[in-house]
Length: 579
Image 1 (cartoon, rainbow, N blue to C red):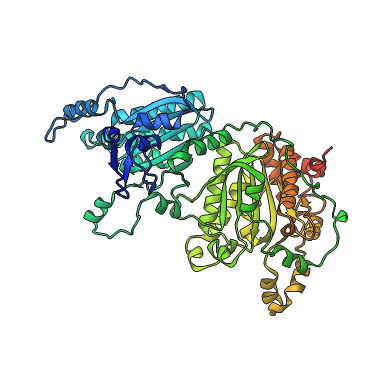
Image 2: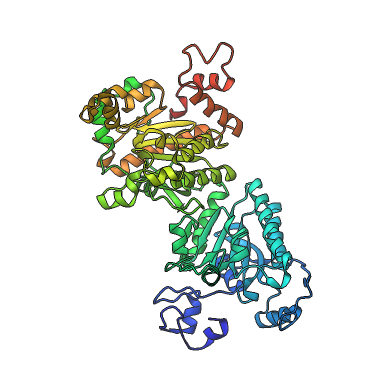
């Protein structure tokens, strides 16, 4: 559906075959109001839609034509180039520009499928690379809007080399800590999909957009494999962990603005101190009441307690949830993304249970699979790249223990998260909000500070599991809970956690907003205490926190206590004190 067609008074939607008034269709950015079909936009239309009005400045790169093979099929390649230019008014299949989105500076490279099917040739590869280099020089995020059938065959192996060239340009942005975002439009295949398009930090897709290495016709004709319905669509790829976000066209500028705001690490004006902070965290076990550990276990499992998504809704602004491990799966038991906690930009990750039987089943009862831990690891690496604090919310009985999880390397995924978190160069705060079950919880809790909600529990094993193994009697779970000392007061005494977040009434389930206010105060106070520390001292501080567990009471070994460990011991709990 091209621009000429939309100038006519009426046209047919290719998706639902409904009649559309042409000018209304253009005003809706070529999205059908009946079925939501997203027709293709040209590169100029795309830039006009995404960039703030009057902000666009086209990057006029001087890129010579290339015909390295003197290629001719039925028509010489240079003649095909001239015809494409005459037909589209473009020099090549991509336009690069500077501008702003939501007031945030950005470099955008927008591909145009009308020009040689958006194919990746030497000129396109050079333009994408020059755009990335401009973003690198200016330390400005790069947004790439893709629409391509693959590599440009008329340029032979040199078109293949563009995949490597553009990929290394993205790698330079990774090393420099500069955000990259891909907006996948229909279609994006071949060399573009297998290079810069899928290397971005965040992959946003329009509804129904197709993305893949080999197109359906290639697959069907070469290996004669039948393909499932919806194969390679954005919806299929979201479910299988490749795409982060699907956004209708009208929401794309807002989503990109939210991502750019967090990546800029700018404190959001007017947010600090504007929210109820709740009561201060408790750091002295004597200030907590004694309680029965089994009662604490039952309270921690109350389905009415706020979930991670509840807390995200109550605590954050501008939050964009990201999906997938980029390896083929998206675990519903673990959620995460970028947003603002008061005025602090953060990456927030947490396990997700739910409140009903249906929600619990859909979320795998809050037990992450290896894909969930790999998703968490991907988000933590993004936080490290962008210099953003990491907050984790933990409410899980443990990692999912099924056959598929073992086959997919559950132990390896957990171990890699432990190592990754130990070395993150950014402030990290973990909060056990419900159940903190075994290594599945610890894989999100190797943090500078570990907090726990007053009615939450944290243990090496569930009381039922401990009772079955050591007492040979699952009904001995209450005795096991008491022996394991799983409640907040005992955990604070043991030093396993650093502070206890008070809960309203008889528990967080009685007042989600009050529970969120207390958690907000604990998180912001803790983060503000950690944020002045540099990367090296954050890692040393975290190392000191976990190194002391199991060490001799007088120290690790005479003369071996590190300066960071002494600082940790001397710091006390002053960072939670508020005037």
